[in-house]
Length: 188
Image 1 (spheres, rainbow, N blue to C red):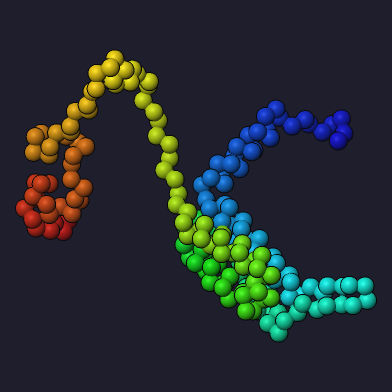
Image 2 (image 1 turned 120 degrees about the vertical axis):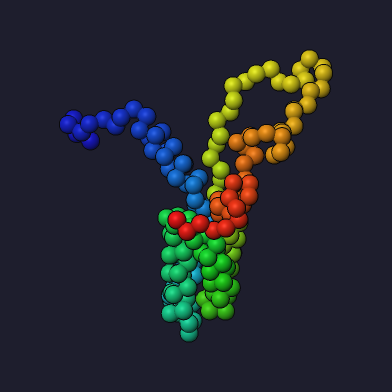
């Protein structure tokens, strides 16, 4: 670092860490990481040669190209989970199927390591659901029932008891008598 290099802004590391944390929380990050990592042993072990002194043990199988294809597909599925979270179900099911195919094709699925990572990552991808955004909390007031008496919340009015915007129908077809229509479709 030279004297002319500007110093990093204070708090930049914390800001970047919080940005990454928000990005990571909005997608199936860990499922994508497990699936990505599962592809590495699956495509590496069939091409690996283990050496014991002067003895070389080739781990290559007759389906080395199949192992490479399975490994690359798993890496692509893992990365796609990070950047296209709407494909989570497809990517999860595809990862599970590729993990099962890797058992006979690729040295027991990368010596079980790649198989287990793909299986767990695929299950996590299928099970992941986006969270609801945080709702602002109302200001803190005295909690009901602190004075020893049990209070109950009032029931909302029934739809026929008055116009309440919260109880309006979601029927947007224009054919419901509740919307003031006569039941016929309007073309314009």
